[in-house]
Length: 193
Picture (cartoon, rainbow, N blue to C red):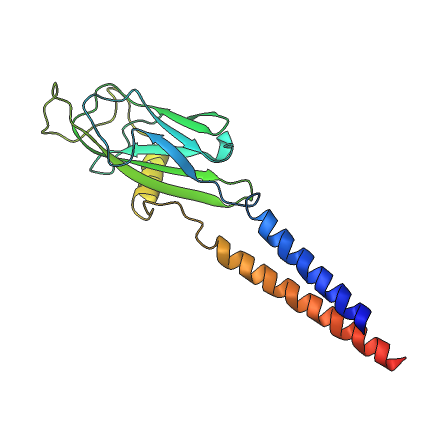
């Protein structure tokens, strides 16, 4: 009976340590910096939107869309990916207004992470009347428009992935139940001898 208690305690301690120690390795990817910055007001058209993330990005599953106030993408370009940095080239003829940057990436644990933020272009050399339009001669593809609509409407300003803590609590609870069940089985087996 004493051995069963020692084994159960050791297993429970190992499970708790593994759960706590594994959290950073399994953490969702998240945005660490952006240019232009969230809620910034810029006085000239930025050449790119540059997003830096906590983990490396998979180019196949990285989407960055910049939309004007009418939720129209300003470019149909695909983002360039270099390790943990995604960069989207912007057209030079963007008009003054509020723009939304929406992104969707996949973290190392396979969970999609998405978010969005806005910045304002207030360029003294261009009129402020019309909202930004796609770059001259470029018509966004239906898929680019669909992507913008998908991202801008439901995406919160912060990263998703708030369910991570709940997932870990559930996993630890299941493991504790398994360890407890094993300890009870060992104790009953010893008593039966």
